[in-house]
Length: 224
Image (cartoon, rainbow, N blue to C red; front, top):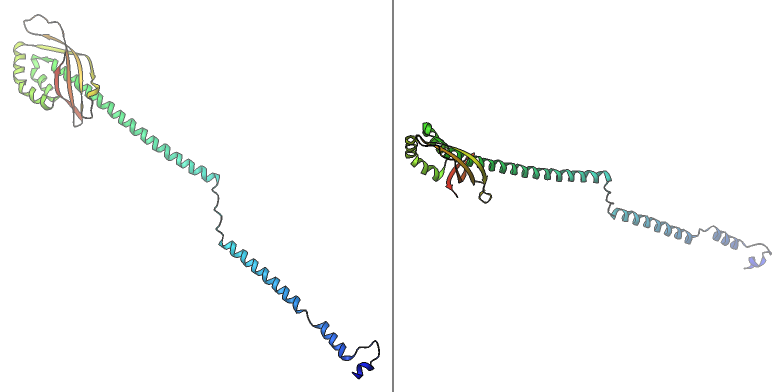
């Protein structure tokens, strides 16, 4: 204390100068801690953003117009192919039905001609032709009567010629296995030693039955 008192004005004591120097050179620890806290917060925010980006689902890629047009074109092609196939099948079915109806009609017409066109000079062949185009009960019945029928024709020297005036299928009778054919026939008959007879008109209902790949006459009725 004596030294401090003895020191002249304007001069600092040694101890005082040392304390001020130490105070001036000591770093500000408070400022460094603030900067460290700030840096830590920034790193934490960056980590949170990166984690959020990783957790987020990746965006779905948009379908291009070209790909959409391609898919639509494929769908259209498949639909048209199916429609074409269905129409083709229906056309095939219709064609098959028409061919079958023509077959039934032709067999019915020919059956009527066979029954009404018989020449005594070839009666056996004419009767056999009738049997070849017959089936079922009609075949059985006509076969039993064929012998006596041929004898009568030969004795009378009969000759008959049939002409189809009109023929058609009965609509309600048509099935996959057969049909009934209505036939209008004009028959001209002549006998030995008898004057020529006037033509006669007959109407016949001929039942036609499908047999294998063809059809045959299964029944014959005369109708008014």
